[in-house]
Length: 160
Image 1: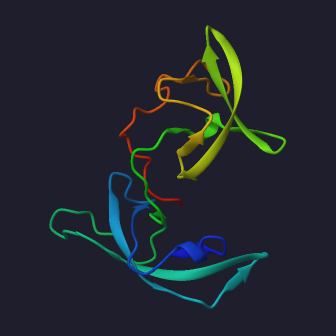
Image 2: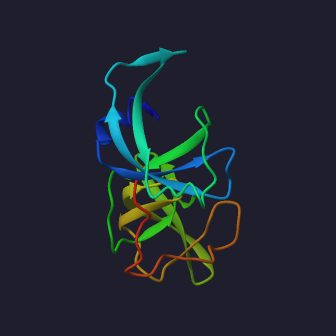
């Protein structure tokens, strides 16, 4: 695995995640981080670090076997929370120093300032500014069908 310098402080040995190989579209493989290198590589001004991970629950008889050198994208769970309010990340806009979300109230859009928490590739935790049942509008579209997630739903764990 290759970690960006901003990810390095959050990734620890033993953390779990998944990897999707470009050549094997139909399956995500669970993994566990087994080592993290501290010798940086700089290429075109981008600093990265190498880490290794072990594929978990890999069944050679049933699973398509990844080959050495295959490209893929891994997501490592660095933090998890349950019972959070979450919205699609693309619903959040920045206005000056504030983060805002458009909420549908009485058929009209109302801009609300929100405070955000953790996020992953798709959703962002909302700490304040919205409540369960609010209907949000996604940029470039109609109100979100999913609205705000019900209490008890879990923000998908992890960032990157």
